[in-house]
Length: 457
Image (cartoon, rainbow, N blue to C red; front, side, top):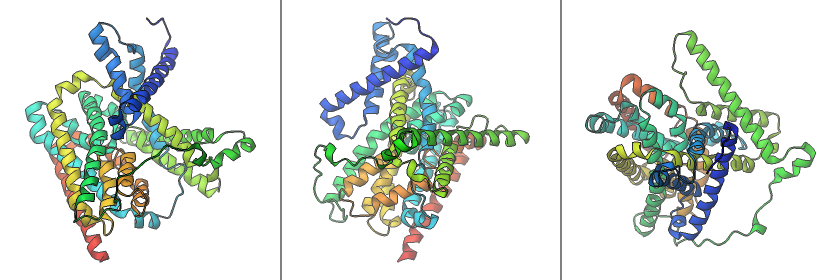
């Protein structure tokens, strides 16, 4: 069916197939209302279409390659590990850099609760692997931090950690993580919707939202133009091009930092950074790019909307490619572990929100903690979706505090430096000690969060 193409042509064709899958997914979502009701992204649906129509399902059934040739699938399998660097490089670019004090005042409870979720996921996942999933079902020790990597981190984090997991002799953990990350996108929105409805009906909980949301069609006349586009003629480069340049410089800085760390640690006989992923350092690169723009008063030339366009596309492609190429055989062989870890993660997030939320947030605890619940179960966007569900008119500080949280939380957890270091630490000290350490940190964070509220009163 397909002719002979060289490697570069297969890369181009892979993007053609991916674009077709995204468009088909858009049509499917349009005519299957419950998919839209779940706020399921088009990229997730596209990933399942690639999986369904590719070599693993349709190909196996027909004895061929399906509608997506294996060469294109091989290209798609490499994309998530590359595109996660683009996503993380854009986290800080195009944002105003407020003072540290301003950030902390608005985001402190969000940072604490988000960290409690992450370290709790580390602890619970490690204990599950050490005490149950490892001895009874043969799950390798490298999976001890998989809950945080997949639920708080997501598809890109799993893909970015692929090299370390493969070198640790646990490639099946990658597919397990991708499966968990996919499930988390559903549990985040569904579970969050249930919690919002519960909060609205409970006489003990005060929620800003008092009635179901009614969404109307978007009117193009109401969409504000991109102010940065006005600079295009004078500068000779459009806003998207300038944002792209900023992101690539951030990635380059990240590469430089990682290579310097490898050089320094290698001089002392350590190989700790040899397989270390790049993406946590691209956040630092993005911060430095934005800092230079701010100091030189040229930040107006790189706007957040254009950065979001690029990172949003990268994330859509990343998710579709990651889901479409995950191994169903590896997923099937670890189905029990998948179910157990999902139950643990969902239960922890629900308990964390309903019990810790009112104890860590001094005011508006429901609207604010539901955002962190969403991030612990999906990604940053899920948190904003749930915050909007609970407070559609933005009468609380939930959205702004949650947004500021990302400036502190994202570089460290949910795919940041601590997340990236988790697998090497597990391999060095074992899942049981790793879980114990994470549990202690979780307890300290909980006590700190509660003490802050009591002190403020």
